[in-house]
Length: 450
Image (spheres, rainbow, N blue to C red):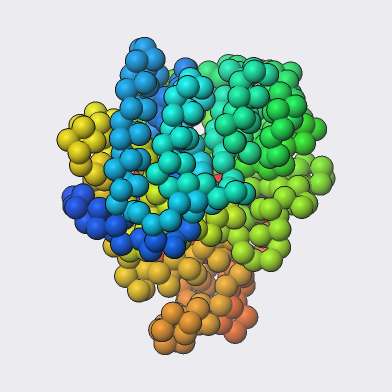
């Protein structure tokens, strides 16, 4: 790695799946205000729905998600009962015509931890409460170790069109160090089950920076993953935060690659995927030509939200489940992270939201600038400022703030337009950071840039 890049790679920076980021959400957000925002959603508004399932059969030691391993399925069954109560309650507030949900995403955890019957119950509640559009994208995350041909067929019959597997790495020594054993053959068979069942889109998650990984091992994993032809791949850097996720203490610091090695691992993975015909999308996604994500990137309609890069352009994001984050025209809403607190609020007939943030006009402008940077790698802040009703010189200080980045080659300024060269796409968050007026440096709050 060029020594000019090292200071940027070592910085703690937000992932910018929202702006302002979740760090800025107020912790005493009034549930009655959340209800008011939901009730004010236009009856004609297009909707997106996210459902969080915080359960897994086994905890992977690298995991940074909000999840746990229940001691019995009864806990999950009760969780589903409460989910349905919250969905029904929210539907009574939102109102409007049915058939407006364009995107439905089950995340986790492992959504397929739930029995088919319970997945069906949640789907039915969402369809009854809001209604899916005829061409809605219905997606979920799954564990390939638990997928059978019968399960794949059932999920397809439910209407799921896209599924995501947490592959991470195919090397057995690495899998042993992260407590996730799943040989290449197992993932290949699970992918075939999905193809036979009629799934139109499969996504693999890969990671770099895991214990025991080398440039050679991640290159082989990328090549093997591409051989299975998933329509999309996401490539994330492992964030080691054992002070926040206690189970990560099972991973030895001595086994982790340094920042320079992480950088080269990410570059090697990209090279392998591009050689296999995949297009680089945004910071960390890849897609086959013709995939809707690739099309959106090409015509600059790509979006970014809490699920990462997306084609979702819905007017509001409704979220259900402990810790789930939603978005209305007024701002962001987040449900209680603690499952017990979340449960008690729903049982009391209340909105389970405990954190949120109302957006200002300037927040919306900065959010738009950051999103376009994250999606297109180029933006004209002056033009967007005028479009949002601000003065053209609102960001006149950007050349000064970006001087270090320009000197390092990770940013270019031509007139009022700011761009990031593709070869430095890993540093796009460093450039987006200069537009974040809320950011306060704090140790261990965000992941490293690389």
